[in-house]
Length: 212
Length: 212
DNA sequence: ATTTTACGAGACGATCGGTTTAATGTTGTC
DNA sequence: GACAACATTAAACCGATCGTCTCGTAAAAT
Image (cartoon, rainbow over all chains, first blue to last red; front, side, top):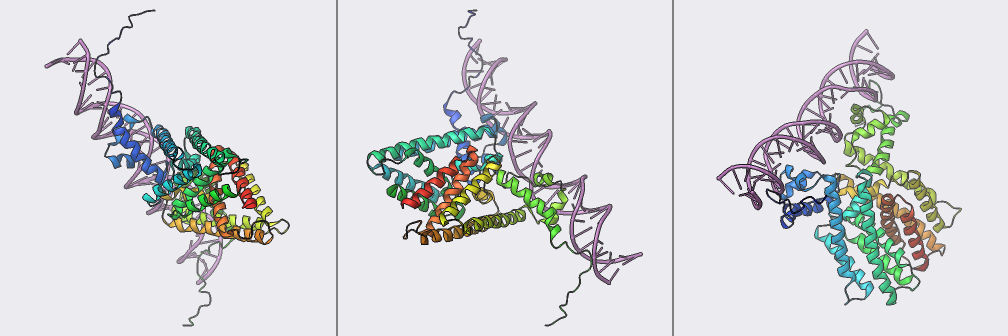
């Protein structure tokens, strides 16, 4: 032991650590998100994504190990993106807790309208497709929902402390219900190309909080 | 006018009118339903369906004009199958109206459990996939949802007349909400391979009816 | 018997899927 | 500047896809 461990000083070009690994790769992920939220995983070919950013096919496997790895990356990325969005709303101190949820709803409706209700939720899309997806996706998708649920549950607890919802309400369960219904509403909104389903579900949810 | 319309008596082998038109064709539709509720439309190849029933490829295009036509046929078929199921429950005179809805929920949960939560709802599946589907599917899917909604709304009206839910409740809207949330719950049930999401959503829905 | 139609069977072709390969470009160190 | 290591990509691979095509057989009319 104790071989000369003192920096073997490898020859040749060193791998780039950061930054530009966030260039082409970044573009691919961004384009992938756009297409997958619209068409799903199995229905989308890798070439469509490549084509959008003008990257040749051979390059894909330089940046990602496989389509599956690309998908997993996308899930994590989208999960974080969405979690930040939630935090932005749920952590807004200038609104009452329930108003924060309302502001998220309005924001999400806006987001869907911006793309004419063609793009949905990546996690919901892949969840539905799960029967045709690599099994490795399942846990990631579940975790993502659990993460979102936890963030919403925290917001609902605040609402409870503020007296906006009944003190005996099960905020944990309510958070679960919200995401179940919300994903259903996103699905319908995509189908009908309308914000109506989102409105209807959110309306029902808030009304139930008030009454229950 | 009034040409001799009296059965031109076509020559050749007549098409099998019934029964056996419910043979190969029927088998293909049945198998198609199984696969599509599990994997969706785009992820499923026609050969997998053929393979399941041991029918050679050439036969497919004898019975169906295209994969798209097959899908449309399947939608109609599933819509009717499900409508009959709804009628069976919602028309059950031995139960109070709301109990009828509960019995449907129990039945549907059973159905999903029977296949270990691998198969979902065809209409929901295709709705989510809409971004990658022939546009002809959209109207059929919407119509199917509207049909189910109407049937549920009728049941809810009966519940209202029976005093099970508030007299000022908007039964039409409630029916819409139910299917939005239910489809979301089916999605999650498939993802988690568990009946929990179905229970949770149904529980919330009924609680809201009681309170609201 | 012969025609006409229904149905079964599978090869075929064109295309497109994800993936691999080997070659080319690039940027460091020696 | 030479060369080693890394970055990038062109081109090919191979299997699967949907849909077509032809051909063979079955069955009922003429």
